[in-house]
Image (tube, rainbow, N blue to C red; front, side, top):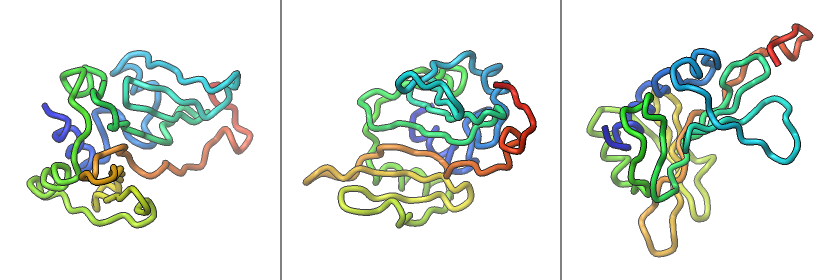
Length: 166
């Protein structure tokens, strides 16, 4: 499996294996193991940010994934081997390659104007809502920077006074 295959699967289904917006955190960790927790400063409140290499997941107090971010701007992309069958992929995927892969598999897409400005452009997979954001280096073709769905909006029981797992 190549990174373009991973990206196309994400665009078509909105998920990577057990990872999707709204997925139960315990099911993801059961399938992929324990992630690295990204702690910003001394703060450890919810939501929390976890990472499996370049796959970053924000998890709500109620233990649901609320944001998925696949960082693709690095030279080498690191993903959990249990998720896609291998651990590293070459990074710096070009816009033309992503679009060709989406078109080849029949995955409809459209420009995504809210994240298109100055030195970046973006497209959104129509069926899944996955957004691909590309950086446009001066004098070069656009390069994929990040991919993921819009944040998951839900009625969190932790915000209604019902205790949730901390």
